[in-house]
Length: 432
Image (tube, rainbow, N blue to C red; front, side):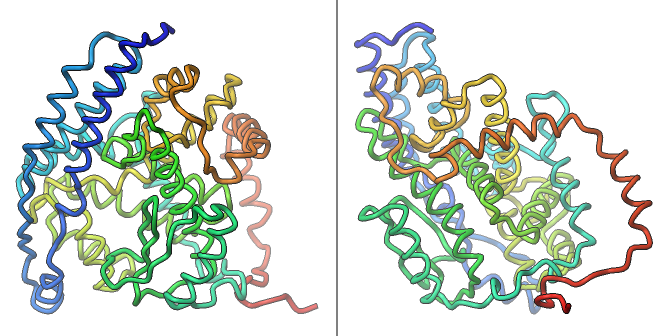
């Protein structure tokens, strides 16, 4: 790989700074906000939502992108990385400019993908994973999986206190602030400096660990690491080009640390399936009814449907596809880690944490790291900081993927057919 010259490095820094400015003006989720007043008329009278999106001026971002392009020259991997950023941010501006139209979907699909997109193996689709997980988990009584005492309820203040204690352990004096707020729509949302907790939300002890590993040790940590990159602060900025790997890494962290709840996995799968339904023409009411049919309350079904239709059209065919990035990102992150372990390049796993990035950016960022232009990540989750368990697990799972499941499954189905049900964790300790 050709080394980056000093002149190219300075040009790359200038381009990246301009792109950082552009990304700061292109805040997708806030541009797609819905008025909460639309919920009640729909739930009580069936009035279809008619969102009125806030005006967003993308002209400064477009100018900054154009300025960055004047400094990007040549086919070096660093320049290729910056060119991809230009394309991503141009498309992001187009996404914002076309809210409420069918054209919005085309930009969304370009940024976040679509459920039927084929992966690098030329055969796997994220829709396949969603349908597999949904079918596998559909018949399971989740209440029978609960460990007694671990699902105790916490209010927002109790949750925040428990989380703060864990954050101090991992981040020390640099720990993000935890704020209880009535101005956040999700149960919790994280940035590099703070984690906001919705004041009326209810939590469990399991939620504390799940949020720690998903939000704090991935989203907050990579944001903090990126902001410490003096040469390329764009790595501290989240944008649609980083969303898939950010969320995939966060879901992978939940799994590898034992904090993935099957209900959550099925919820993520259901959203992918609902996105495909909408692409195929289902309207807002049809998708809402589908979620209700899956056991969601009407309020929960409305929120799930809103996530998919924000920015698009209520008549179907043009969804916002962001919610498929959790599973698609999980597949990409898992296969990247599995591959680098197989080719004995586990050192590259740590590059995932230098900031917010895409897997395709790793050759460029590794080149910059080898030149001392990118600093090692300061904050990392324990499972990535000490790679012994992860490498062992991936080496084993690589072989396990070659084992044919049907033979084992048919054998155990026959052997266990008449075995009686036994105690469930929810019942407490079994009687002796």
